[in-house]
Image 1 (cartoon, one colour):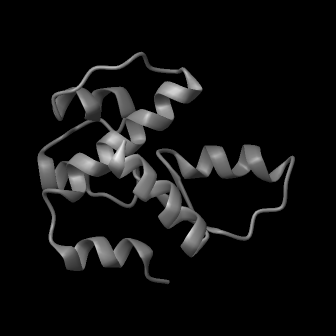
Image 2 (tube, helix red, strand yellow):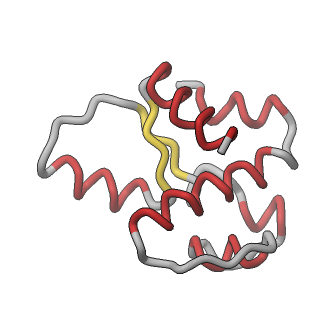
Length: 104
């Protein structure tokens, strides 16, 4: 729960939205609300193949390759999965790479 709380606080503090498929989520959300926040996409902004030799960008597959299984396509489960995936991937990368995700 500690990393999840960190993600929530970080998102509010820096006005960042986190998504695994930001192109889809952004298009959907912008139909109902105005969004000015920066988006970080764990599907496109993390180089899964280059860094981890993960061939598929599907959330469920990436989590499986990182050693986790979850019930895909459930909104709440997907949110927890993205946080877990981010936690696992960030623990394996250089700090400079993490900072690049948040820079404009």
